[in-house]
Amino acid sequence: MGMKQAWKRCPRVHAIFLLVCFTFMLYSNLADPMARSLVVCDEPLNASIFTGSSRCGDRLLVIERGQELVAGAKVVRLGVTVASATALGVVADVRGRKAFLMIYLIAMLASVLCNACTVSLEPTEAWFGFMAAAAFAGFFSVDQNGYRLILADMAEADGDKSKLGDLYQLQVFSQALSSAAGLGASLVVTSLHFTSYSGVCLPIAGLLGACMLLVASMEEPRSESKRVASAGPDAEHASVLDTMRETVRLLKGNEYLRRKLPIMMCGGVVESFGAVLAPFTMAVYGWEQASAGKLIVIGAPMMMICLGLSMPIARRIGERRAVSFCLWIGIVAIPPLLLLLPLSTTFLHITHALLIMNQTLPRCLLSAVDIQLTDEGIRARFNAALSVGKMTIGMVMQPIVSWLFDATAKDYLTQVRPIAIMAIFVFAVNFMQIFPPCGPMYMEGLDAMTADRLAKADRSEGSQAAAGESKKED
Image 1: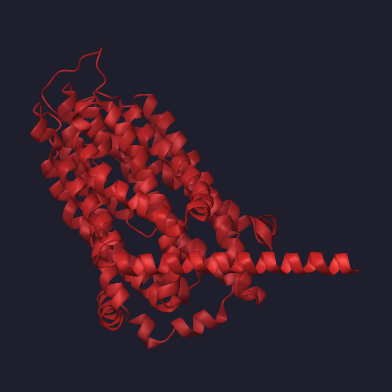
Image 2: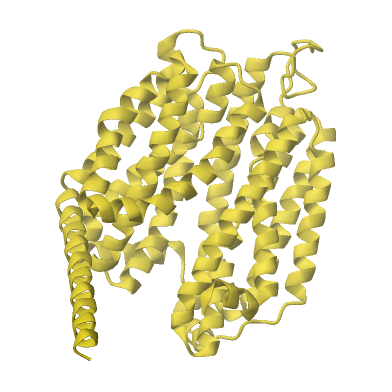
């Protein structure tokens, strides 16, 4: 079908997704500066120094307390996400995809309005307002759930599930495009040095209102088989606990998933500690919040470049060599470089580039190994439960990250504490993918991919040679 035909299949759905994803990325990346704008202290303001708050003149204190506030908000948001996961899934199947999208958009609108109102509140009330905004933002993000459900329904309605690949390809492209635009917009906003974000929240609320009007006018995608299958008593009474029990049963019956579980859990810890890099650069290097945000903005196009280069590189040097090279970088190079971050920004830029390469190319190729070694249904259930587990890890780790991070620290050991923990888990994740428990299975799968690719190339060359000889004879 192709991406162009996939867009023509239902342009309104794709337009809604572009707008929602842009709005979500813009809003979510303003959480840190919003938190810093709520910090209050007795230090008077200095007109020559932008602290991020109109009520505190101590820049480092604003960064530290802002990070504490963000950590608490993430715990609340992840808790709501875990609690609402199954309920929203049932709504999507029983009441329809439009209902799912409307609930999500209403919750996001409530979150934005809560943040818009915190500016005029006293410190204690502002804290509760920020946490309420995080709670409303805790519902599933549309780009990971509702959009994929609608695309699957569209393919099923056509009776041709082969079209789903083109639809998902368009989704990945649209998500990258809208996310990059949202990140860029958030960078522009943070560079304007606001200390009150109520004026920023109102246009975001307007964008969400426009999304709600588009969803309301959208035709409901039909998927009767899913509706009937999901309307039974098992679906109605499903819970996160049931999902975790199902995961235990899957792990008991699948050795590959048992070996992969600790890698994914350690990856969740790395993600939790990675969130401290932006405030770390502000505190240690003295960067402005817009400069710290550039790390995230630059990361998106760098990741897309790595994705585009990953398969050509793997075909040239072999899948096993390509993955092993990136994993060895994660073992030998990245952990020591992380420990050197407090010394110079040069180490930060090198580490940032290596982290993107280390995460992108192996993830692309090892996902193909996952497809070889696990059934699609088992893999989907495992990943669903795994996302709940990683969010639970995030809830546990955020207070620890906040406790370890000290923006006012002047000595090396105190500055490097949270980065050192991240380095340990980066080492562990890469070590387990090249050595037991998962290394041997991964390498066998990559060797099988290479052999299959070379065999197909030989058959193709043979067919072309035979065709050429037959033409000569004719």
